[in-house]
Length: 488
Image (cartoon, helix red, strand yellow):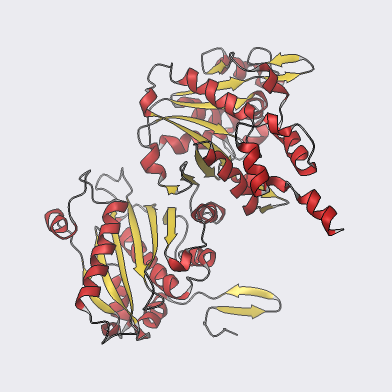
């Protein structure tokens, strides 16, 4: 049986989602006498608003529908962008702000005291004629859920996956209806709202790689956690946020950059991680084809490293993210288990030289065949994808039984010896030699145990300021022992 929303039915104790038809979503919006707003769509026709026109009853909902497609005309309305581009977040925000202001100016609030104003906008570029560039866009809505309150915003960036412009236009229209419907009827549950954006859509049609919620209704929403949901739900392969903790568009920060990536659990970030970062960066910027001012360092956490007992531990994720951000780092959360997928992802945005900084144990894992059984070409196919790019590996040593292990004396499976030699002895793997030997005795898993058990000495194993944050915010189980004792 459907509930009052007409969207969920219960079968036994199992919840089953019922997805309303697009026409039903549009009609429900249209029949709500208080919802009233504008549609501004640039670059792919007026694909969203047509659903509302066709559903019936649209005269009470649509204040204006327009498509300022011509660049000069668009500039005359919304102004000229500093970079001269049109498919940008800045352009979308100008569209939303401009249209909302006009609505407030032109409609008398005394005459319409209960109206919930909204402005929906998109600015997109669909697939090009040569089908080399699949297209992308910015989509957003500025809306009220209380006529006397400030506006809320949901802004997202999409990447098209279909190879036909007409199909992309239709996909955009579906997404738009889902967004508007979710904004008014699911704003109190942002995680569910995210999932509803894919109603009547498949993941192979559309990718959402950035989303930001703002406004009074979303004051408690952490957009980094929303980014995590995008990866967790399979809506994108990777999301990024900057040192300020805010979501950033991967394409914007990675474009044509020299990229140095460090993968780890960072649970917590230790002096080993920072020594690896600092020493590998020093080596990387000395490489030919690497420009220091054009270099971006990315700390990557894979989704598998965020799992605790089979589920994503969101609090644990926040702990790691906050510490890395406090150190001024850019963080990427990915769904890539294999390194070659990371490199392929970066290669979508840059052809410049890239680097991977890793420890010995990580390099040994790369030469483990079990990770490549799903590939028809096995490990050779993976290494072709990995080292075909302009890539260097910077290897941080480890200490084992008093011996320092590096690229020269590490042991891989006998079957992999010749393959390893081919890459290691051809300048693809470079040893970090200027390392701090005292750091080789630091292991994050041991530090984590010491923190949770409140043993002495773990503070000295972490970068400056990190121990203080862990204690202040009770991260990684710090303080739980004392709390339990007090409870007794």
